[in-house]
Structure formats: structure tokens, C-alpha cells
Image 1: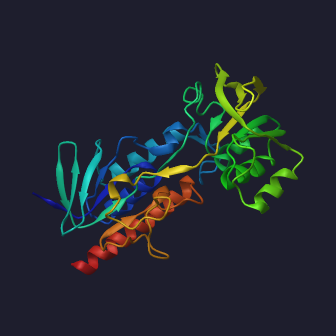
Image 2 (image 1 turned 180 degrees about the horizontal axis):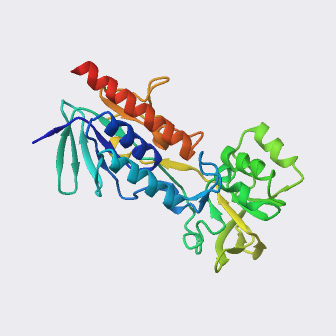
Image 3 (image 1 turned 120 degrees about the horizontal axis):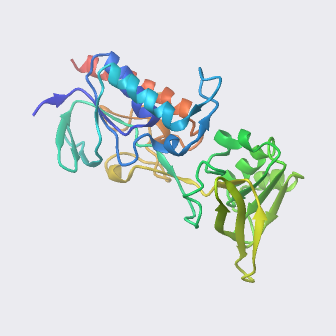
Length: 307
């Protein structure tokens, strides 16, 4: 069996950038794209904050461009999902549904997935007023009414950020109190653009071409009503895609892969991680791409030293 110099697990900005850099370094990378090729950008409409695209670019188009560039320089792409990895000896072993590979190094770029409520209309209206990232999409809701779901720090941070653009923000909290820190609570409660509905849950999102109404229910009284809204932000957290690495790599309490300071090196020599799978804070396409570059450089230096 041919031993690969490096295998990249996962696509998206981090994975494809790692592919571009490792391919240009003549490492002949194999990129296994995963069950959701392209990651969260595939459900994003217009991306206006990607450098070099002053007119904006559609999320899927951005991913396609990154993919083409990686392939141009020699990245081999396999449309499959990794089912098992073995870091116990070198070369490492990577298994998919019907293939097995050996490799001297691995770059993990499996990303993180936004957590959704799963209410009717949520899936249908993603990218049409429904989002899980205020810092990505807040600009599109200038002078509009929006709803934010969640009661933790992330929800209140996103609601506060949205006050820069939206005319009115309604936070739906399923309990009678926030889980967020006191400073975040005070900041949100003191903002005149923000109102809070306690003991309230979204039960349906309504709209044809775009979001028009959010159907809500008071979970104490059972009373149902509708809110006019052009924006809906699910702020109930993200889950890193690290299940197959549990017990193999050091993860933090939320499941994100731990890396050594100022590097993409994991606790296993020769295994690197980049993108949203290591980043619970920024979660931007450009930061993911940047760490994909760093992972490729770290892998290249590791392999050079090994040789």
C-alpha cells in the first residue's frame, strides 16, 4: 500500500486551503471531503467579508473556487467519509467506508456544525432569513426585525451585535432566566432595541421565498402567537465534528481539538488540526482558511524534519 505524505480530513475553507498549500509544497495531499463537503458555507448565501471579493460571493461559489484551486495544484479529492483513524503507530491509518490509507501526517479540518432546534421551516429557510451566525449575516438585516433563540452568552452576544443593524431584536428564552454571565445579561437588558420573551419557544418558521413570521409558544401557559420577523438566529451553540477522535486526541470540555499554543499541532506528533474544529470563538471562513495555511506549513516542516 502506498504511504501518503499527508491526508486532509474534511473540506471547507480550512481543508481546501491546507490542500492548496500542501499541494504547492509537492506533498501530493489526499483530501477526504466528508459527509458535508464545503461545510457551513454551503448553506450561506452571500459572503461579503471575504477579502478580494468587493461585490461579495455566494458561499457555494467560494467553496467551489477553493476546491478548483486545490485541485489545480495537485490535491487529490475523495468524496467519502472517514469512519476510523489509527494513531497508535506510524504510518497512521485512515479508513473510509470501503478504502484504507496509510499516511505520514494528517491534517484534521472537520469543522463544527451549528446546533438547530429542528422546528418546521428551519431547514427550508436557511439562508433566506434563517442563520446561525450573526457576525456573518447581521449586515443583511439592517432596519429589520429579528429573533434570536437562546439564553447563553453566545445568544446575548449575537443579539447585542445585531443591534448595530436590526431595528428590533426579540430574544426567545425557554426558561425564566438567562444562563449567560451577569455582564452579558446587563448589556442586553439595558439595550433599548432588545426585548426578551421568557418561557418562550419557537415552534415554526413561516415564509415562502424568505422568512416572514416566527410562530412561538409560551411553555407555561401553552399560548401560541406569531412574531413578524425577517431574521431568525439560532444561537444555541455549535458542535465540533470530533466524534471519531474521541479517546484518541486531547479534546476540551466542549469537544474541540486542543492544539499547542501558536501552532496547529495536536498531542500526537504528525497530527494537525485547523479551522472551526479547534475554534469555538471566531468561527469565520477567513480565520479557518488562515489556520488551514498554518496546518499545511506545520505539516510540511514536520515532514521535512522527519526526512
